[in-house]
Image (tube, rainbow, N blue to C red; front, side):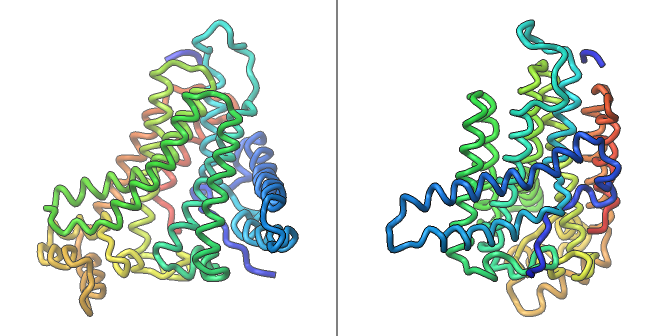
Length: 370
């Protein structure tokens, strides 16, 4: 390792315990600008696109509706988890000596292209939330009504697609085919993960179910963290070993994050979680807590096989999980992934305290309550 009037929905917070006031100044500054920049990207292109539409479709109506929908998801006050991780990783990697003599070792804190990765990560994440809510027929997310609940499924799908399209254009402007390919993988993984979730897998045994759960967790959540971190590292011109460490940090952090999210579906109240509890069971999803519980209570397997579809299945599964060690085992597994993330950046440079922040955020995942 080398040298040293509506209630707006807020996206996932930065580990909840890690407040923005404790982050380095450059991160706070970049995050403050980020949501405004996303709004400019979306609204500017909405206006440009509307000029190509039929005269039957009012440009002003299109822009007004789209602005309202975009503002709903990109509330200026949000504390943005994924961009924060990306910015911290970029700063850490920029302190390494570049592998190429053509790259200036006295580099910026975060380069413009690395900042674009942070922007893109939030745009992809937000588009995935919009699409997930349509698929899950969700009315509430983070204590607020969803886009599909307010504007309908068709508009929600379109706005999600539009956000992805604009994110892709920003990505292409980076001009690095290798980085573009890595970031494009995130969108592919999101689709694969959704297909895995839709396929009930009733013919799987316990080991296969857990492997499928982990693969889905990577595709739907961890891939975004992992490949954003890797892209930030690639743009620093670090070694392949350091790129891999950045990727592994993001992957392990993302898995820990999602496992705790799955646990909270069993232990949080609706007011704290910002969405109905037992939601995964109601959707027929067997996540880590119920899979671990099934090791102790095999009778859960028949409920899992029929996706908790019979009357009383959800309540019974909820009770069994609560009486098992499934929740404890889930937290332990999440902690193991968080500790692996810490290991991946333990020897990273710590200028501006970025390594310490990456470590603190990873460990904070296992203790969060929302």
